[in-house]
Image 1 (cartoon, rainbow, N blue to C red):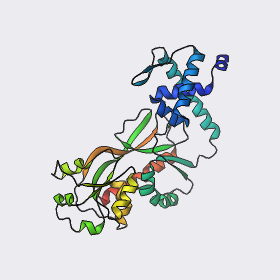
Image 2: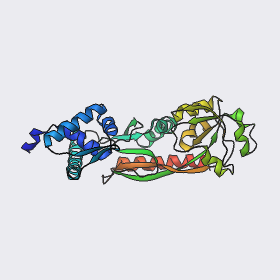
Image 3: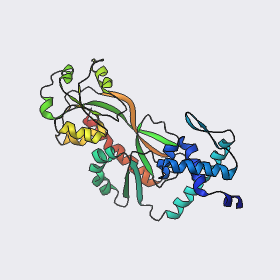
Image 4: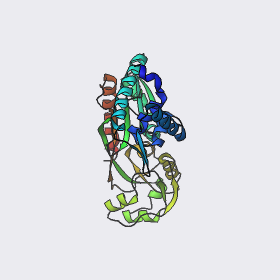
Length: 298
């Protein structure tokens, strides 16, 4: 292992992250440094190795033929190192670390945690609320819940619930809506980061080609929902986002029409990882809770 003395470990980490994630920006986000720092580490490490690992193209960093086996071996090696660190730090198997989007945590999960604690008093939850796709192979996260098509590299994805969308608005606004076409009379508040648009629901309602006029656009679904609660317009929401606000009477669903987006909420775990009992217990509990949410919208 003496050859490791000639190469900096941080440089090898930068090479591996860029190769696995496919871009300097994503590597920088994972490593917690600037894009420039990652770029310099890559250049410096290529010089130390006397080998060009990436080709610089107009489309970004592309691994060279010689670099491919190097990067594969680095990923395998860092995965083993991560496992070793996890073993060394495993002082409390009763702590379950969950990675979820902030909107899912705030609008659906947090309201149910007392029921989880009552059912599993020996399991302590640590919620990592983030919009980043956490690397489950190299982090201390036990399980994540992601929204998408279920096709992420390096993870095992298991469908929790298919995403369905429907209009929601303040109760006083819903009273004036008699048929689906009336939705076009209301202004819309838009989640600018959503993976779907109004056409998904309008098509399901037989109103393809039309949509409510936009009043406000937000880059956060939770803010968009708050605007709908405040009576600023109608929003296209989904089950886990609107669940609590509907039960609390803050919002109303004017029409029973639901539209599938092609996406869903998925459990994600590190590919090939052993699934401990605390993870199995959490998944079973979430499925029970989600069944109640689905029933609310059925």
